[in-house]
Length: 464
Image 1 (cartoon, rainbow, N blue to C red):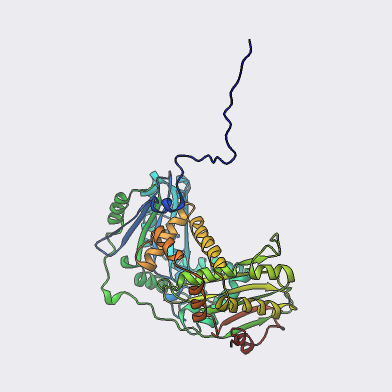
Image 2 (cartoon, rainbow, N blue to C red):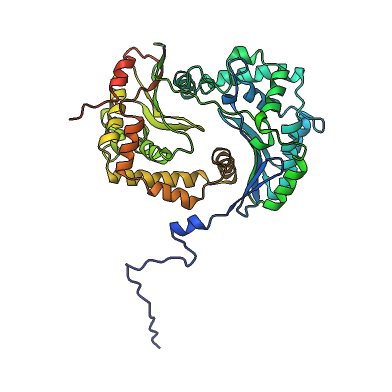
């Protein structure tokens, strides 16, 4: 008996697609809602429930080194260290043991404008994490003995930071960009301050800035918003709202175009940063400047490719004038820095700087729609990739709540990015880059670095 088998022939043009697949635009509207509740004392609770078996929960506080003065610079970071040294309910070892028993991670970080305390744990353990965080932030015992012990820890941390040349040059850049203002301070503070900050300085800073109106209890992952609101009312009800006149206000920081150069011919490479003043979080030009920064891009010698790269990266690959470069944009509440950081040898500093500034001038005059579209796609992709995990989402919630007073929906962010075109990029770059005085910081064998007036001249093209 002969059997005949029939096989369905599928045309090569047929595309298999899951019925559950969504187009990109649809997914922007399907992300979990960010729910926000304001307590009677002014504290805000913000959550995003993704249904994950884990969560990240913590306090985001509007307090950092920008709220310090020359005498107590370093206090915010010092206080972050002291928060984990024990309370009346928990000793330092009790805190460590409790975190270990939960299989959780407890961490904190201090920036120039904000301080975050947070824990990553199983969703079912969130009440224990909130109890722990509220206790250590509000009730930490700041003893003279622990203060003296922690000085050595912070001094060792400062030594480690000094080996990170990018951090060193970035601190120098802030010093000259915002000379004489709190944004010019380092986060860790100078060593003389670390050795003299007292218990009273730490207590005063906490009592002044750790106010409920300046706090956001944020959570992401498997979280229930209503339950977290009840926890906030339970654990933070003792934090009474401060009178409006008692809430510190941030002072504007003026930008100064200057340069600082630490020449060290024993170093094999020079580390150079050049930046202009940009804008704060709420300025509508923020997105266009981000797009311009992405067009500038980044490159290092480990990258594969050459002529297939774009713009400045292709030139650096072809001419081999530097070891690496990157564009950066540091944004604060009312100002920011937009610029480039490059590492090169002593013989190519001038050529690398010239190439960077030529690319800046091209952004101001000749950027194309193709480049802008490519950069917009990369900006949207990188932003979504940064939200991969409960901790990045927690940080994004806290940062946006403190900076904007709300969390911007992804669909709105998409619309803002889509509104940028080549003409807008050129207009914004002309406003903040063209013929503007930069701040310059450099460390290493910098003999061939042009003087400040020549660098300033590089931000100008004679146009007829």
